[in-house]
Length: 118
Image (cartoon, rainbow, N blue to C red; front, top):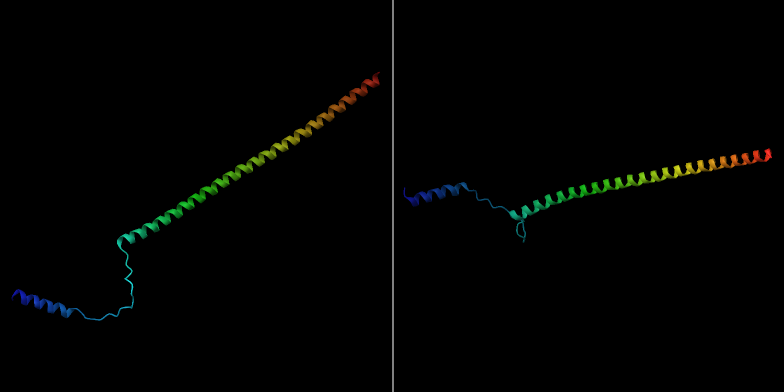
């Protein structure tokens, strides 16, 4: 067989295998929405960036909550210390007044003894 007759036979054999079915198309005036490799990569990077930034924001929020807790505990401890200092001052003032009263009593008693002996 010659080259041309072989090629013709092959084309006829291939043509009989291909089904000629007419596919209905939807009516649209826009270009099919297909993303290029760059657009798909950009979308993937945006998604990853968003997830990473969300996690970073969560970490920052946790850090600020921890800082608030620490400062709250520090403030609470300083109030307790101030309260304890006030309590100690009150006790000392009471003891001072008590000792002053005892001293006045002892002085009056000594004065009374001196007057009675003369």
